[in-house]
Length: 351
Image 1 (cartoon, rainbow, N blue to C red):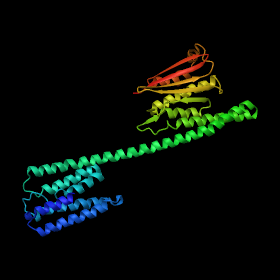
Image 2: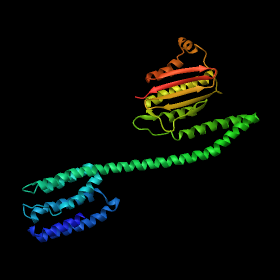
Image 3: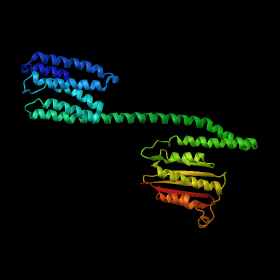
Image 4: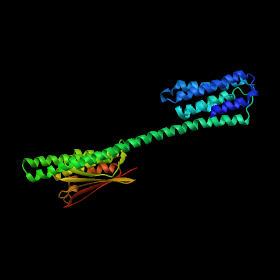
């Protein structure tokens, strides 16, 4: 469109040329270069720096030749709005910086030869100087949004595939392991040991399936607390059931490490005082301003005054490993106990 406009305007203004033959040659060169550049730009592999520099150089040369072909007091350059093409190409390729550089060069080539700058010339140059960076900025934003969209689509596809595989594992492997565990326990003897091992593998595999939606590569020094607790519980000797929110729980790395360490200390206490046959449950709750982790076991509970007695004797496992860690994070650690077992509630504020 701008090429057709250039040809039409120069034909209309043919009487203003002092050297009409040279002007015709320049117009034909610009038309030919438009066809060549369109073909070159059509292939992504050919959109290189030399092509962009050559494209802008042709435009600047045509603008610079205008005072020689016309008189010194010329009004419009030979290429006119045709220079928008190279300018936009620089803006698309190098974003706002490329648009600004190309606009500055075009404006300088247009203004320097002029003996008089009127309001129309100033307006055109101003629009060029503003339009180049703006188009470049918009192109950069669109490209960034496209990359983010592609990443989100890949993540969604991966999540769907993980969900499909999880269903297949649940419907097959987990049910078989659960059946082996029940039949082995009922048969006794060596089969009971086989059932116990099948139960351990079932719990490990089930935990890995639960982790599939909580594992994330959190940026900015953050860690997924839900995934970290799942991984810690899977490796713990106790039978631990972990319940987490549907998504990730991103927290600062220090908050994650200290909270996981405090939960591990709770589980270690269950292992020591209740025994390896005990079962523990870890529940993670996330709010906008705080996270709460509950750790409960099915043991006989803690005798009244036992925690205070242990602290007085210098045994600071609970005071330091659990309450101390959470207190350092600005949170609270409370315990409730009875014949039904013991439950720790660890609450950490999120700054």
